[in-house]
Image (tube, rainbow, N blue to C red):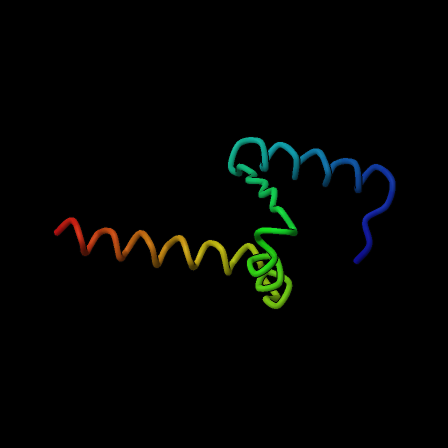
Length: 68
């Protein structure tokens, strides 16, 4: 299915409205001289977004265990 013309504009508008209400973005700036290991690892994974979220969730769980 392809969106064209007015349908495409409606889709973009609805998508932008949803994103504004329900999402946030995070940008990472990395130094290729001092953080190359991190950059290379991120290049290896297919889903960078999912990989980073997984690492953060695992860290949250580890910290919960420490507090208990």
